[in-house]
Image 1 (tube, rainbow, N blue to C red):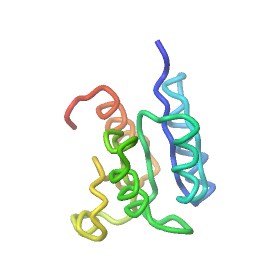
Image 2 (image 1 turned 120 degrees about the vertical axis):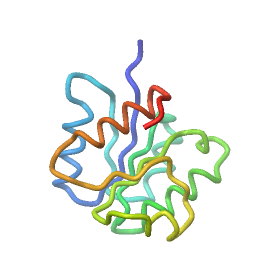
Image 3 (image 1 turned 180 degrees about the vertical axis):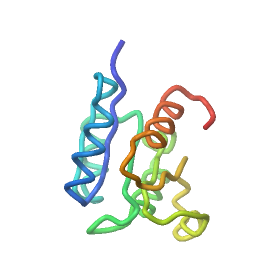
Length: 126
Protein backbone atom coordinates (compact mmCIF):
# COMPACT_ATOMS: atom_id res chain seq x y z
CA UNK A 1 0.00 0.00 0.00
CA UNK A 2 1.36 3.41 -0.99
CA UNK A 3 2.10 5.89 1.74
CA UNK A 4 0.07 9.10 1.70
CA UNK A 5 1.68 12.08 -0.02
CA UNK A 6 1.50 15.51 1.67
CA UNK A 7 2.56 18.92 0.40
CA UNK A 8 3.57 21.35 3.16
CA UNK A 9 4.12 25.09 2.64
CA UNK A 10 5.98 26.74 5.52
CA UNK A 11 8.27 29.77 5.24
CA UNK A 12 10.16 29.22 8.50
CA UNK A 13 13.08 26.79 8.14
CA UNK A 14 12.86 25.53 11.72
CA UNK A 15 9.18 24.71 11.37
CA UNK A 16 9.79 23.07 7.96
CA UNK A 17 12.33 20.72 9.54
CA UNK A 18 10.11 19.96 12.54
CA UNK A 19 6.98 19.29 10.48
CA UNK A 20 8.92 17.13 8.04
CA UNK A 21 10.35 15.08 10.91
CA UNK A 22 6.91 14.58 12.46
CA UNK A 23 5.21 13.57 9.21
CA UNK A 24 7.93 11.23 7.98
CA UNK A 25 8.49 9.48 11.32
CA UNK A 26 8.09 5.73 11.03
CA UNK A 27 7.55 6.09 7.25
CA UNK A 28 4.08 7.52 7.94
CA UNK A 29 3.96 9.44 4.66
CA UNK A 30 5.93 11.07 1.89
CA UNK A 31 6.32 14.84 2.14
CA UNK A 32 7.32 17.72 -0.10
CA UNK A 33 8.19 20.80 1.93
CA UNK A 34 7.96 24.17 0.18
CA UNK A 35 9.15 27.56 1.45
CA UNK A 36 6.58 29.65 -0.49
CA UNK A 37 2.91 29.54 -1.24
CA UNK A 38 3.43 30.19 -4.94
CA UNK A 39 5.17 26.81 -5.22
CA UNK A 40 2.15 24.78 -4.04
CA UNK A 41 0.13 24.54 -7.26
CA UNK A 42 3.15 23.68 -9.46
CA UNK A 43 4.20 20.96 -6.97
CA UNK A 44 0.65 19.57 -6.89
CA UNK A 45 0.66 19.51 -10.69
CA UNK A 46 3.68 17.22 -10.64
CA UNK A 47 2.13 14.83 -8.14
CA UNK A 48 -1.36 15.13 -6.68
CA UNK A 49 -1.17 15.08 -2.89
CA UNK A 50 -3.51 13.38 -0.46
CA UNK A 51 -3.33 16.40 1.86
CA UNK A 52 -2.03 19.99 1.99
CA UNK A 53 -0.60 21.54 5.17
CA UNK A 54 -0.21 25.31 4.80
CA UNK A 55 1.23 27.86 7.19
CA UNK A 56 -1.16 30.77 7.58
CA UNK A 57 1.58 33.40 7.28
CA UNK A 58 3.78 32.54 4.32
CA UNK A 59 6.43 35.01 3.17
CA UNK A 60 4.85 35.61 -0.24
CA UNK A 61 1.14 35.10 0.54
CA UNK A 62 -1.11 33.50 3.13
CA UNK A 63 -2.16 29.90 3.55
CA UNK A 64 -5.78 31.04 3.31
CA UNK A 65 -5.17 32.53 -0.15
CA UNK A 66 -3.46 29.34 -1.30
CA UNK A 67 -6.33 27.34 0.19
CA UNK A 68 -8.86 29.45 -1.73
CA UNK A 69 -6.94 28.74 -4.97
CA UNK A 70 -6.89 25.02 -4.22
CA UNK A 71 -10.58 24.85 -3.29
CA UNK A 72 -11.56 26.71 -6.48
CA UNK A 73 -9.52 24.30 -8.64
CA UNK A 74 -11.47 21.21 -9.75
CA UNK A 75 -8.33 19.06 -9.51
CA UNK A 76 -7.70 19.85 -5.83
CA UNK A 77 -11.01 20.94 -4.25
CA UNK A 78 -11.51 17.49 -2.72
CA UNK A 79 -7.99 17.35 -1.23
CA UNK A 80 -8.09 18.25 2.49
CA UNK A 81 -6.26 21.42 3.58
CA UNK A 82 -4.90 22.04 7.08
CA UNK A 83 -3.89 25.60 8.02
CA UNK A 84 -1.13 25.94 10.64
CA UNK A 85 -1.22 29.12 12.66
CA UNK A 86 0.14 30.72 15.78
CA UNK A 87 -3.21 32.52 16.15
CA UNK A 88 -5.88 30.61 18.01
CA UNK A 89 -9.57 31.20 17.72
CA UNK A 90 -12.26 31.72 15.15
CA UNK A 91 -10.90 34.92 13.57
CA UNK A 92 -8.93 33.14 10.85
CA UNK A 93 -11.94 31.23 9.62
CA UNK A 94 -13.54 34.42 8.32
CA UNK A 95 -10.47 36.34 7.16
CA UNK A 96 -10.20 35.25 3.54
CA UNK A 97 -12.76 32.53 2.97
CA UNK A 98 -10.39 29.78 1.83
CA UNK A 99 -12.49 27.20 3.69
CA UNK A 100 -9.75 24.88 4.95
CA UNK A 101 -10.74 21.52 6.36
CA UNK A 102 -9.01 22.18 9.68
CA UNK A 103 -6.93 24.69 11.64
CA UNK A 104 -4.05 23.57 13.88
CA UNK A 105 -2.33 25.94 16.29
CA UNK A 106 1.44 25.58 16.07
CA UNK A 107 3.12 24.12 19.10
CA UNK A 108 6.38 22.34 19.71
CA UNK A 109 4.51 19.03 20.02
CA UNK A 110 3.27 16.93 17.10
CA UNK A 111 0.15 15.50 18.77
CA UNK A 112 -2.62 17.73 17.40
CA UNK A 113 -1.18 18.01 13.89
CA UNK A 114 -0.65 14.27 13.64
CA UNK A 115 -4.16 13.49 14.93
CA UNK A 116 -5.71 15.87 12.38
CA UNK A 117 -3.55 14.56 9.51
CA UNK A 118 -4.35 10.94 10.31
CA UNK A 119 -8.08 11.67 10.63
CA UNK A 120 -8.21 13.56 7.32
CA UNK A 121 -6.21 10.90 5.49
CA UNK A 122 -8.43 8.09 6.77
CA UNK A 123 -11.69 10.00 6.39
CA UNK A 124 -12.48 10.05 10.11
CA UNK A 125 -14.09 13.05 11.72
CA UNK A 126 -11.78 14.99 14.06
